[in-house]
Length: 315
Image 1 (cartoon, rainbow, N blue to C red):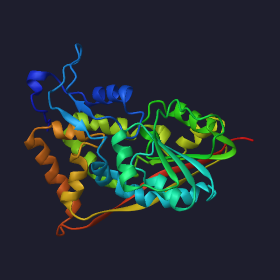
Image 2 (image 1 turned 180 degrees about the vertical axis):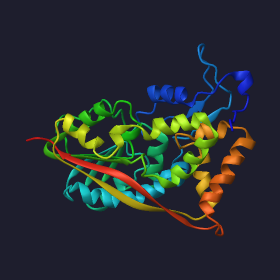
Image 3 (image 1 turned 135 degrees about the horizontal axis):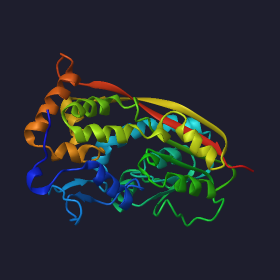
């Protein structure tokens, strides 16, 4: 079965990988992206359907439903792995809505939290304010902090959307003092997100573009086990340790689960929402059957695996 996007005959072939690459070049190096309207910018060499779909990267409420609630479960486990002292001065890189920043401050650390999205930062200030946290707008690729400013630099669920990953890791190392900690946690996209995989594997059977997007999403070997370790060592960090962290993601109902992927946040959401209603409903029917498994609708718990890595700046 081949499914089509709305207006596909009038607007040309929809290529989500092209959109993804263009979006990465312009905005995806940051967590908390500016609002991006898919299909709104005309390009002379590539026709795109006028679907006007948006990644709502400035909306902290949408992010909370999509990933923030799971980030709250990840934060304490990640911090336990980092071994950062309770009185440390810490930089939270691509802090988003402040989940990790607040967890750091609650344990006594002094935190500077940096992100590009004013919407996310405003949400962080309103929902996760703390006297030990200062939220700042900034470019994580070229930070203005002097060398060795912090005792540690951390980032969660951010490096996997950066085309300039090595540049950001180098900056994290630069602003941390000798003997300090640089740590990150990202999703294990290959096999580590069964809640997401239920939908994307099902949709991949019915749609060739989602199938290609699945390969792009999960095929990035730097985010397979050992991938971040290699990056940390290449950056010159020492005493590098990588470990999986498992959290349980419980969706209260199928409607809540499905809404996670129609909100515009997931990497494949634009393609999913650009399908015809019939095509998307067909996918939803099969995904719903996989969620229910013959039982009544209600809570379902899915494990989520993050790969966490920590290293030390050489003395």
